[in-house]
Length: 394
Ligand code: NI
Image 1 (cartoon, rainbow, N blue to C red):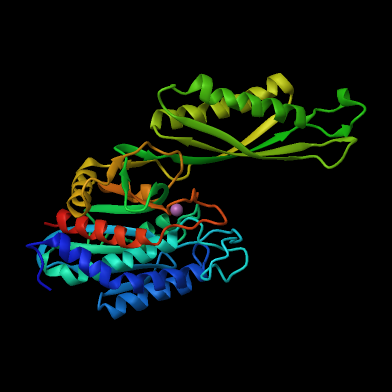
Image 2 (cartoon, rainbow, N blue to C red):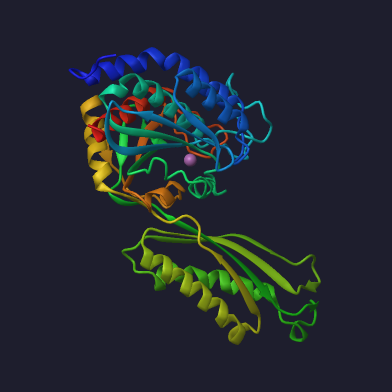
């Protein structure tokens, strides 16, 4: 196909032509959700479509990932575009004809939308490949939901052969109407860390507390003290969250137990805040021995780093979206959600585009059992990302 007198029309018409087929693929993936590193069927759909398009690809990258390559007509840099493929352990309640057929599993974060969108982008870019100066690496990633899918792909060498120079990702956004897009300069999504604290005392009879060391009262005080990490320890201009999500200890009315377990998460958008929060949590735990006679064993796990959008990818992408659709892209505020695309963004200049997915009249949320993205966000996403690739590899 010859393109570029009018890439806007060419990309739009090409996308519109494949849209019904994309929606069919999306509904098929949606009906068959798979958890992280179990995306065998989904990866099969991806590989089948890439093969149909004549796009060379590699499967089983980082266990269930798929990587495709589209060579442009001229030499140039390598742009990665990444989509995630995994579903969540939630029972779907949408009642739609294409609802999950697998009990307890659902695409409630819209990764079915992402996988399908990237297949659409592949179709369009394959068609206009002669116009690209460079290579597009299509990265279909497993296990984004906290299971280490991006880490597995990095370990499998996804950044190399050919070496990725910059990267684009995208996420459906039910807080924005379909047809709209969003971006955040700089830190956009949080570093996401986790902690397990075991508070150990000495068990005994509930009627004789003075003969025991009560880990429950100590744990209750510790949970309260942890709230001072954000309010008293972290610079107030650096957003941070410390949430305790679980406390488990004890068995019945009349026993003071030996120990109590606390689980929680720390979300930050700045390295200083991340370091300050960890140091404060460790110090508060250590202090429990003097104050409450309990020992606190802390297992602190640094998860995904913060996702920092790079203007070198953000600006041309936002400009490309405006060229394709007009002024439908707005600056948003950062979120304290986490995203493992951040690991790739730590290595090369990167940007994650927000793709509006809310249906008129609905107020959907991600990770909700009745989440219903507006499927038109697939076509919008395809056009936006294909146009961005064309501009980034001009
Ligand atoms: Ni997600």
